[in-house]
Length: 312
Image 1: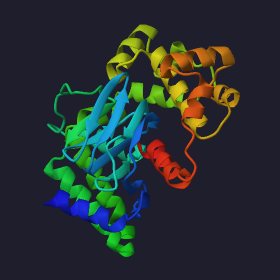
Image 2 (image 1 turned 90 degrees about the horizontal axis):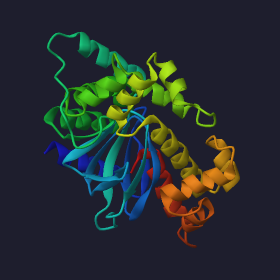
Image 3 (image 1 turned 90 degrees about the vertical axis):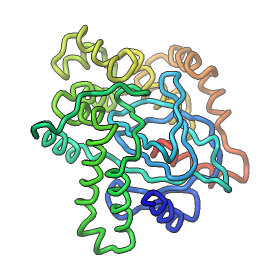
């Protein structure tokens, strides 16, 4: 029943495609009724909970779909392809987007790690540890409902918003995504910190040694732990991050040379070769194929922006 209440809240508040603020920082609700093929996107630390329709993501060649039976928790910045190929006006994608605040998540993770008996042993899952599809358990469902119900009162939102969001974070940390989230935000979050370093230095020639040094690991240990956490070796991950960012810039109208330089490529020919190897087209061909048809610019551009910012 609680999930149906969440769905009704979103339907009542979002009448057109796009994002709607809830009044709580980092929490938005959304609607998408246009089908979108999987497109390069960067997943930030976020939870996305779908209450109607289904969402598709491709990570390192593996296709994953989630809907109202499982929410998606991304605890570390990841390059992916994401889309809503089944969305339609008759069956729109409806859901909530919750940004994971590093400070609050870290505080909660450390508190849980220090509480006797609070931490369960890690479980294997269908996705690499950085991205988890988690069951809508009662704690998560009730916490999300309580959070979204605040939107009806600005006073309640201002006074109770942070505490309700913290309650939702706690439910996430206790649920199926908890092992992954605590690994990224709690003690021993070296891989998440190395990815954060890479993300903020994409225009520079960051090496594996640089990333390992940032977290005090040897190259060999770092390589092994990085692949365990992300399913990709560090070099492949860094290349995927750069090319995904470049693809997003090209889709936004940036020219090929500028996009290449902004993600750290000195040689445009090398950029073109590696881009084509990843996407099957040259950067210019790929950018041209993503141009929107006349008459659909406004709506499709809004949905595309939603795709890139909320992993939809």
